[in-house]
Amino acid sequence: MKAKEGVVNLLNKILTADLTAINQYFVHAKMCENWGYARLHHKVRERSIDEMKDADELIGHILYLDGVPNLQRMNTVQVGETVPEQFKLDLKAEQEMLALLSDGVVHCTKVTDFTTRHMFEEMAKDVDQHIDWIETQLETIKQVGLENYLAEQIKA
Image 1: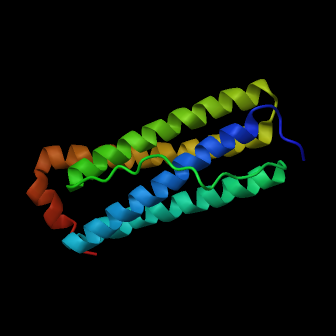
Image 2 (image 1 turned 30 degrees about the vertical axis):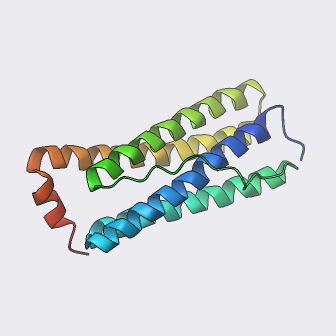
């Protein structure tokens, strides 16, 4: 099926953000594992895997639209040196992804590509959940203190 104007470019832009997020979350998960925060390691690693699934879906959709997925391009991976810094960087990445997806929904509506629009809307729901989780972690750190928060993350 032939893509509508600008849709493959949007899909590749979102794919770039996903590929970056995969790597950012993966390194953050490995750092948490190294620090002994098993609970955080598993949660952040799970988010990296979620991004891999999104990338897989995006690649498949680009190919379905007779486009070529661009896997060579990636944004700068932002690595936090502390757990709160990681959360802030991940939150920024998720907010940027939500903006890209929202722009995608608007564009797909304009060019009447409702299949891609629906895919972007579903991805945006997941991003909203990630944003909510990160904001909850940051608020919990603020309320109970970093040491108490991190003590709870040692358990698997």
